[in-house]
Image (cartoon, rainbow over all chains, first blue to last red; front, side, top):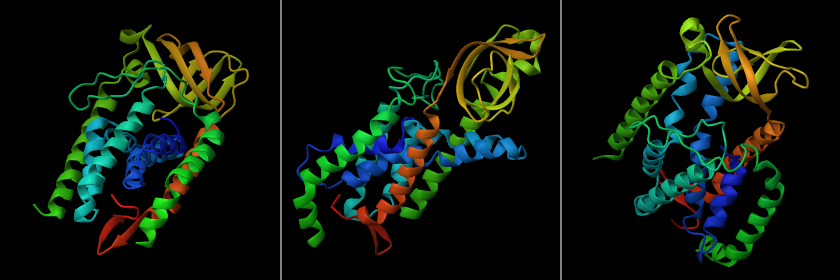
Amino acid sequence: MADLITHGCVAVLFRLGQQSPGGVASFVAGTCLPDLSRVPAMLFTRLRYDAPWIPEWLCYVWGPLHVPVGVLLQSYGVALLFRDEQRRAAFLNLVLGGFLHLAVDVLQFHFGQGYLLLFPFSTWDWELGWIGSEATVPLVPVLLPLTSWLAWRRWRSSAGTTREA
Amino acid sequence: MSRGFQGAVVLLLLAMLGGYYAKLAMDLEIGWRQCSSDPARWDGQELVFPLWVVTGIDGPDRYRISKVVKDVPVAGPSEGLEQGDTVSVIGHFRAERMVVEQSVIEVHHLRPYKEAIGVAGLLAAIFGLPWLFRWRGGRIEERFGG
């Protein structure tokens, strides 16, 4: 997976075309969800080095949160927490953000072990392998301020209007 | 259908998927565990270890790597490697020596930076949430409109 900041920036850049920032926050949240939900997997994997009594399945059960079917389900679950009038839009933004996350991730190369995009219907795995798994790291110092500046420039007036309203 | 019921169904489906995923990962993956449990059958099997952590250096030609499975022995030059480094290794299982004979290794020098950026992103997400969303009437509301 690419780093969370790159995912967030790509999501913001993806929505720069729209006039107002409406829906961007849930789109960015959607693009972050697949990685946030994998934090427990990383923690348990590291903890198992010193605590082998931690069951192995605890490291794996989070895997579906990073495949398309899991993105759909978790987006639906999170969208249920939104107000009725925003729920449908929130669901769409969360799902599309999640799919953008997966699209960015499949650019990476993991020595032939790709992502299970058709899980649970198939164990076929795939990735484009165009960039290394840390290729986005050197971009972050440029990408983050650039994205922040572009977003501020694009939406500063409408964001202020919406907040005042 | 009530929101609570729908939420429960989503959680149940995710739990079932998680269980199935874990079963697949533990049963079907051709990895170190399968090779070492039946060495004669898997002798020469190519194994791929993407993004594993070096957890021991046992000499100039041998080191150990871990992920979910701990301390897989690898026969290969350990010069320049340090405990805690993240590496990707491709190798072949050798039944006689019970090791993975390294054919390709990539040391992921930028991994610690990536992890630090990940933590920064996590913190930004946590602290950014109240600015982007608010909790009203028991529901989340996107501040700038959905």
